[in-house]
Amino acid sequence: MRHVILGNGPAGVVAAEALRKLSPPDTVTLVGDEPGPPYSRMAIPYLLMGDIDEQGTWLRKEPGHFERMGIALKEGRAAAVDASKREVRLESGEVLAWDRLLVATGSRPNRPPIPGIDLPGVHPCWTLADARAIAARVRKGSRVVQMGAGFIGCIILEALASRGVELVVVEMGDRMVPRMMPPRASEMIRAWCEREGVHVVTGARVAAIEQAGSALSVKLTDGQAWAADLVISATGVTPNTAFLEGSGVACNGGVLVDERMESSVKGIFAAGDVSRAPEFDTDRKIAYAIQPTAVEQARVAALNMAGREATSPGALAMNVLDTLGLVSVSFGQWHGVPHAQGGSWVEEMDRDRFRYLRLEFRDDRLIGATSLGHTEHAGVIRGLIQGRVRLGGWRERLLANPSRLMEAYLARAQAAS
Image 1 (spheres, rainbow, N blue to C red):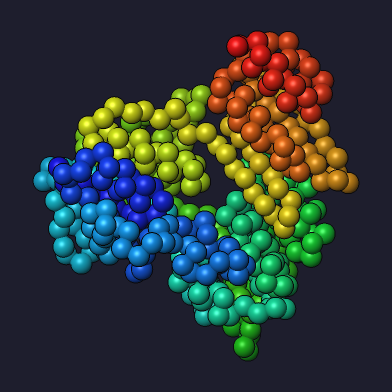
Image 2: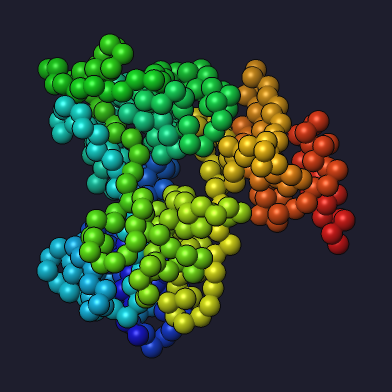
């Protein structure tokens, strides 16, 4: 059996290693489109902070690891997939034959159509090459404008601030991390960032970037203009699926897969950022671009590629963000469900101490939660949601006092034993 894996990020690496252990006689080829060893994009902010060196971003640090496992590493980028011939053609013209194909090609940063986006000093922060370019340009006191304050943007924000820059963050939405946090939590994150010296602009876009001597001038749609030594583009990502056009693989904002992580074409699987998989506890197909989800999806895909039977319990939103020392998390259906569908919620906050907790229920089950400054609740929240725990009378107690989460968890665990 010939297994070809497109993408050598965390999902690709985990799948390759799993296949090697599950099916020793099979061939496993791992294709990545960047030079150098497979690495984790999530480690790039720590590289920029100076906490690790480039080797610290590598997914496997022992020399010769993949060779010893019998995994063939290949540098290349997929150009097309022929499902009828069971072949994938690389941009170099090389053709790889496969019996099972895993698409783990991840995403690419969006490139906003802004005049001046190609000027020197304007960078995404997505690859090791990007990180090198940013590190070479930024100094303590450098003026930096960042476009985007979503989840990825806030991770980059943390890395830039640690280098002592003068930072302006521009978010076109009405608040920071709008796809992770309800409005009041987002407001508290913004207040925290501004207290830490970051200037945050919301409800505006970058209209143009112009060269102004040795610096850049960043002009916003609200009329503001900021001088910058460096501009970072963190305006979201798009799944890498263009090469699948004409293959028969159904895509809609990513490769649509079932609970086995198999696509609409038998023998072609997908995992990680590029996939849209069933969501935990709903009938939607979603993409959650976090490493633990990618790794779990890769494990399920590898088991099925090897002829075993495995299913995913569904992708559960688990966003954990450390923004300049303020830890925030959101789990599950943090946005809640309508009252007509059995939805109810409770919110508790302490603005002065930057503590916030919101719980979302459907009938007597916890289905989602958001918290700031309450790291002690993370494990309990996840357990209650993933366990589909019936809270019974504890739902009313939590609506009255959401800080009693641990009591509720222990009480229901004891009742179930």
